[in-house]
Length: 186
Image (cartoon, rainbow, N blue to C red; front, side, top):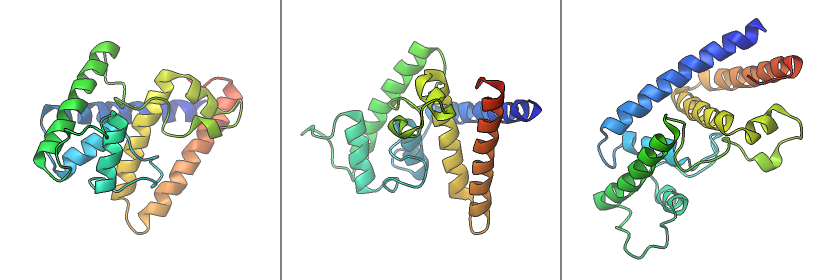
């Protein structure tokens, strides 16, 4: 049980930092900059956070962003390589983000994404993953944790990447062991 409490405290600390990061990002970003692209990626979520998905900022990524926002076939879209495109996307994302934050009363994660960071169609019945799929709040927390893990994975180089992956597998195993013994996830 103490392992679960320790893991939960660490998760809360990471969540608090992510919330502060979102607030600072929402305050000001330079359009079309690397940090702006990361903000859009974290908000719209085009990848599965396992290294699969388009390269952030690429033409393919911009196409997926348009698709996720439901504007891909709009004939009035600015050229993807222009600041006007970034401004247009920024306005849509921030408007939806603000509406989502007002509606939920908090920063509950990705604006357009629903469900956890993984495909719920592929989870085993009665698994921890299934519990997360069925709970909106846990799904939002999973997406946030996934964004944080992705950021850590990008920073992990050489020998650190395998260590980070091993730690993630250990964390998931510990979560599953703890929750299956106690009978609940939170």
